[in-house]
Image (tube, rainbow over all chains, first blue to last red; front, side, top):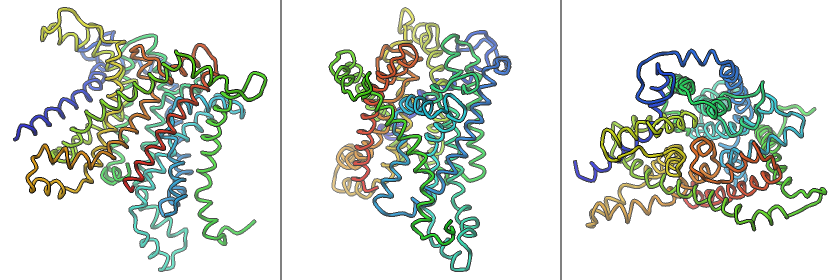
Length: 263
Length: 280
């Protein structure tokens, strides 16, 4: 191996130590037997996972976050999939402009979206409610669905659909039997990103906190500002586990390569 | 009511697009416009530019804008410099390890910012692992250092959040470089190093630019890391957060959000120009 290769690999390994270390430390601490968050840990225990279920706000907000993630993802698919179907086949300049517009929530500062939406939705009478949260989360999740479905559908040759129609299939049958199965990996990937984005969101959810609408990340932030115990680590580990399970399930169903095409 | 089946192709297509467009027009554009409008609204209900005049002539607030942009620029620069060699290894050297590298890049993206911040706080605590290594194990320091609430640690944590985006976008550009151009340069006698600096790097600058703008835009809006890790920074998002929490001067917060929004729009415009030049 040449010297430059060794240097490159050494740099890459150091990079991944930097990337993984802070995360690995939190995973280990979530299994600590100590009453405080420190590394290395004196012994192993599951008591901090039990603590999650004893502290009401964690469980209540976890439930809110799960519901919110599902609602925002379903809404994003309902709004986003038809738009993506149209935009992937359009070639005109204004179709590009519309795509840019539909993806633009990704580029705007989240804190501004959250702050502005709070005032706007309050003026409309929605106030601080689950519905308001669902609307704002859909705004930030929609681009993920549009982006992934557009990428997948663009790679599908129109010939498949044309063939179905020449053979006499109606538009609806063509969509159900040909188009939908072909774009399913895009919908799966988009839904996955959408759910994880919603579930993890703090800067937008922060503005919509109330007893009924506080999401898990907001509760975790508030908890961290007052105490520093391993229950936050246990919750984070659980959250990471959920994300990995979702990724593995999506991989089993559709294959990760197909989904990375979409990212 | 017109029969759906007999709609023209154009109308049917418009129906596909309409829900998403209307939704974002009402719940994305209107809130932002409403928010900016509030910053131009005078006490008596008229139009005023006084908030911007006050804001842009105040040394403190000018400093805040400068600090926001400079912090994001520093984080972006560090991210891109770190990301390039990693992306290079991923595309050119990794071979059968490339799957593992992609997994290690994606895994941190699945973790919450709270989790990572928690990790930094534990690692760099006074009696944390890093101080223990430096003082007890390696003997490099006589006394533990105070890392938490320093600008350096906050920057490192921001880089940690943003660098995977830089690696992924640089890797995708490197993948598109025609290897024959590099081979040609080497056949004509250029060294590997010279080939890299005179062929590979120039071919990827536009891609680096798009990746850098992406990182810069996310950095500009981030505040959770700074809230939890401190570092003494005064940035626009942090001030908006504080205005909302404590001072509750919503007109001022609207003014600051509008300025942040204008910076974001400028970045978006720049990114589109770069993308168009690449012919994507």
